[in-house]
Image 1 (cartoon, rainbow, N blue to C red):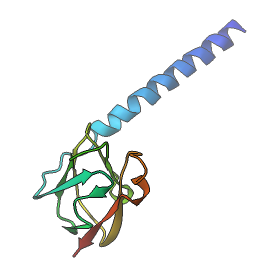
Image 2: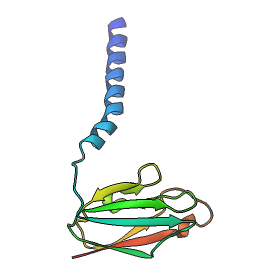
Image 3: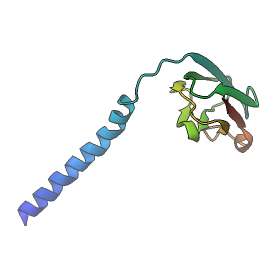
Image 4: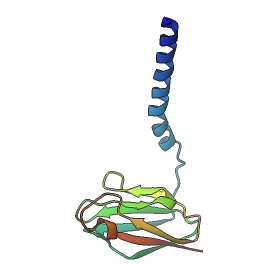
Length: 123
């Protein structure tokens, strides 16, 4: 009985260590990409600076997020892109042509649900 409990505790400990380490490992394993272009996206209370932003397909771009006022962020699920004041830039390579909705990543108040813009990826 004691061996069974010890074995179960050891397995749980290993699972916890594996779960804690996997998030850091996946971030570290992201390849370093050099951007050939840069796009600055600014947000203020309940709006992004522009209604749409245009990118070229397969061209690496560094997205830089600037918070002008309020507490906001940006989210584009198709690009696995989430930026805020803590992590304000990321290099992406848009690999699909189309229109992709960008929304505020932080619940920011009564205008949060209407705080949207779009990223248009062209050939």
